[in-house]
Length: 200
Image 1 (tube, rainbow, N blue to C red):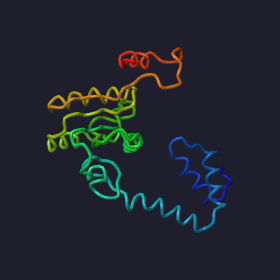
Image 2: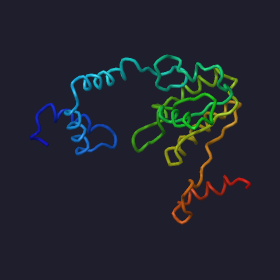
Image 3: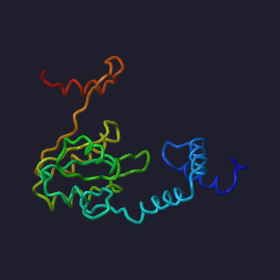
Image 4: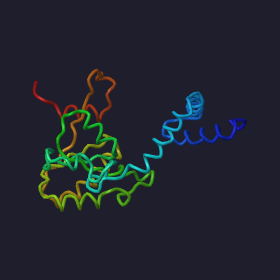
C-alpha cells in the first residue's frame, strides 16, 4: 500500500485503527468515500467532530450522553431501587433494546483484565461506591457482564465492594441460547443452564 497517494494512505491507516477492521476493509471504505459527493463527506467529517464536541459522560451513570445527567438518570418514571451495572456504554443500549428493564444503570468503563493491564483502579469503582452511598434507595444490583474470565473476575471484585451495602446482588440468567445443540455447548454454558433451569 506504499504506492497509494498520501491522502488515501493516511485515511486507510486511520480506518485500520478501528477494532475488527483490517487493511483490505479500510481500503474498501476509502474507495467508497472517494465516490461520494463532497457535501456527504463534509457531513461525515462533521459527524466525527460532533462525537467529541457534543458528547459528554453522565456524572451519575458514566454513560455517553448529550446532556448531564443522561435521559435515563433524569427519567423520574424509572425504578430507582434497581441498578444494573454494565461494562461499557454500548451494553446499556443492548439492555434498553429489550424493553424489559426499567431501572437505572452504572457503567464501569470496562472489565478487570490483568493481562491487558486493566486493573480495578482504571475502572469506575470509586464512582460506583459514591453512587451507592448517595442513593440508599437502591435495593438490588444486577451484574450484567459477559460470562467470561474478565466478567467473573470483575464480579468477584464487585462482590467484595458491595458487601458493605444492604443490597441484593443478582446477575443475568445464563444458559443455552434458542436454536443451539447440547453437544456443542461448553461445560460452563451447560452448567449455567442446569443451575438456572425453570419449571415448565
